[in-house]
Length: 327
Length: 232
Image (cartoon, rainbow over all chains, first blue to last red; front, side, top):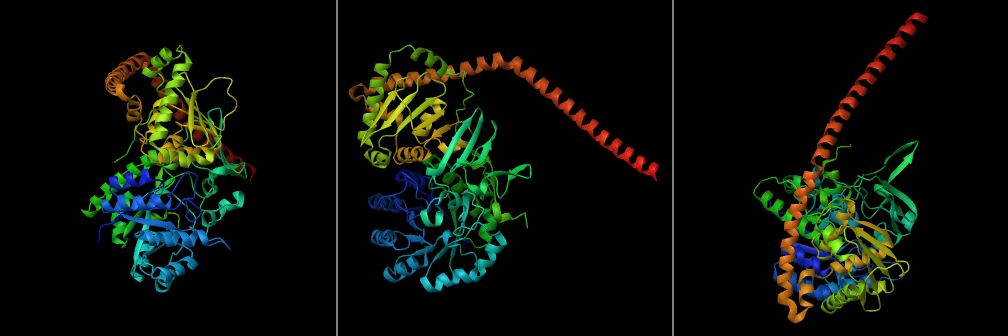
């Protein structure tokens, strides 16, 4: 079994430096536009900042992966083409993509550029992954957060490339790349605009000691005085139907896989992805340091469960679909 | 194994900040404003990339409300510059209001604490234009701001004596924190013990009611069964 590679988020140059210093093996980020799935205001990198980031990371022996993982807009693929060309020009260590047209462009135009298949491509079976490998020579697939550990093991036995799985952060209960729930009430989705429940549509309202969270003027949740809060995403909303109030899909919670690293290694996983390019450098520092320790322990065959409830949505963690208990 | 960052809760009201607040409250606002403007200007010179990220916020007003000190601050983003002033009642509406314990707000600005974590734990309250708030947060977080170092550096040749004064201030703050915490503990202990007693009593009553409820259900079931038998 090989040691797990720790792939960490960087929404800003400061977060990249923090991630590298805290022990990241690789850092991923996006350009400051709609070409990546965290197109949030004030976040992300200019071309010059990416160039400096590459210098900083490479000097410390860390890799830099660029996410160009949204789908090119109809009739306006220029920003995406430019992003791929800039990635090639700057010699990023890999580019993370989902759109088959862009994958084809990158593969043909920049044959030496290493391609990773983004989770946004929603490739959740060996047939799909092998197709992407054959057509575009992808070298790694980021698996959706809907698979169990045995399913990941099975996929790994049928493919010839690396697999990367999510290990911490936002617990997306839907199949990535196929979820349009956010766009039903905001008109914007992660796939097309790089935003789920965009901040422009979010309102937090304090009602005495209660906190009401709204998305596009719809109330998604109301937290009591002692309840831990969460973001107003539809999939983690609390709704009332037939006089019963509860969570329909998922409670506000975050993924934490520190407790199952040995199982993920045994299943043939190559890399662990920490979610959270939209989070602060304080979050990056704490999560990366903890995962560095957990991965180093796992290499020695030791299990190190590290609770990070303080950083988690709703103040709680789950192993999600990896240990699917509901089927 | 758990991982915890330092978190200053709003419940820590009985702290040296309470005393500091009493000292600051009667001070004239003008010198405080000059101090804030001096520091804000210094940070802007040292971190121009932050200003670039703040560009979409031109004209936005943010009200920062530390829960445990007497003054609120207004941050105004202009075209390529930022201004920070002590809030007064004649200043008009704001776009975003951020409230929380003073030390948490400072730690967040210093990049020591995650703002989302403070929000999840309800130690940070935000209202207004969420997109503007996130833009501000992301911009401030995009560079390394060490508030202590910035304050010291902004005073040029006075840096060394100010550093010494800050060290003494920090020592006194921590020492006073411990003393006030002990005092608070001593003052609230009888009440806390009484609350614990009431909690136990309450739990006992709760268990008794649950037991009676169970017995009642059983009796009702038995009566229904007897009633069915009688009617047959």
